[in-house]
Image: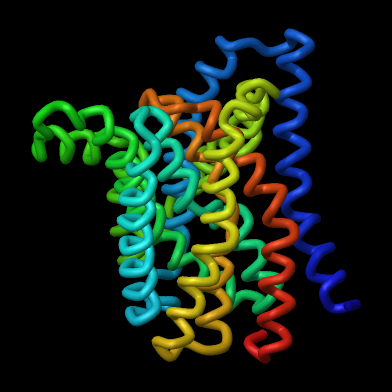
Length: 318
């Protein structure tokens, strides 16, 4: 029990500040300190400037060769793609509104690994865990964003002929994808960024989470939470329970053990990324549903990630 409470306390110390900033955004909106214009402008700023800066800095300053693990990366790609297809197939059976469908799919698969996953991995394994998690982050950032663009755009074209070329153009023009494209060669060849660029990039990157979370809080309202409760519940259950259990068990069957397995388990168990809201808002999906999913998965992850860490410790993975 003491071990579980320790894991619970650590997880809460990471997750609760995120919740408090979301609640602050909600409170400020109710007090008319911020308005719909702030939510719209801040979301656009995060999507086009600060989040790409965060992605670029995270990848560019990573030692690519030191943490490269092709087996682990292959499993994450296959597992993510397989569950993404299953989620989309099942969700499309009962969610007919394209705006809701895109928000549900993205909220069910996209992890907040850059904020929560890196911190948990570092706490469990030190620098080696942080390095391994950073490479996984470099892999999932472009993959998550491509998959998010697809699920946020294709449902709107269901009644139309889908142009593969136009969809690819949308992917290529996405600021987050461009950030990855420019950052990977820098990381691969070990290029050191000039201090001016590095410092400026960090300034922009540090704006990302507060702005995104305040915008999420400013979007929340109790009516939308009630109206989307069923969809938010199933997205939360998928993100925090079904995916972590299924993909972690699959990784164990595939032969992963110890740190490799635990780092992947944390990836699968993380709550929905705050960036999901920014993309949903920018691309016309249901931003309120997305905000609700982020809120419920973030709060629920305090319990589920703690249980995951506790279980991994009992099984000798940590």
